[in-house]
Amino acid sequence: MFDLYNLKKLEENLKTFEIEGEKDIYIFRGNKKYIISSSIFFITILFIALNSIYKIVLGAEKMTILKIILILVLLFYVMFAFISLIRYKIFIKGKEIISGKLKINMDRIKTAIVKIDKVKGNRYDRYLEIIYDDNRMIKLRLNIDNYLLFLKIIQNNIKEKFIIKN
Image 1 (tube, one colour):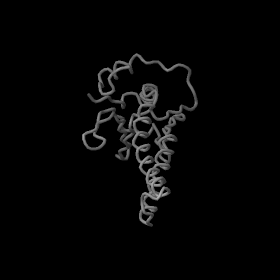
Image 2: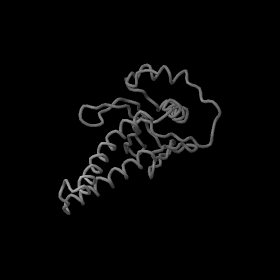
Image 3: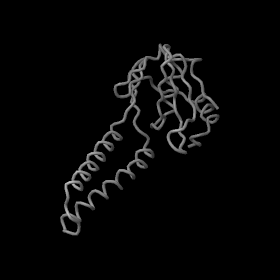
Image 4: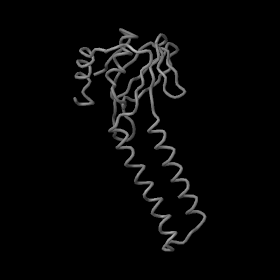
């Protein structure tokens, strides 16, 4: 594997990458490394909530309505976030990119730029920035398995509108 943030290497790999066996629909799921690193955060929150429940059951902590509400909120947050993380998918069906309720028609794309952008704080990640013909901007984070295939399919569909920004 190569450096995720080296866009020159990504460009070289994309030039040599070949799509084997065309399909009607492609499904791209979250990258395993991203899922595991995000799960650590959720597991920590889950441990804190379960530890509080354990202490309340043992009688080491006093049960209050505020604690119960906070524990329930934490448990629902962890459950919702983990399910969202596991169920994350991007589909390419014909000339359409589908991610949840978002549908992007590749014929309406003005430009698609792969670049490194700030996620939050000091953290940077690779994005596909899609600019529609009505100047709407959509950012898709490239934390998916087989992102080379994903980018190659888009590159083949939109040709010279596809740019890798170094």
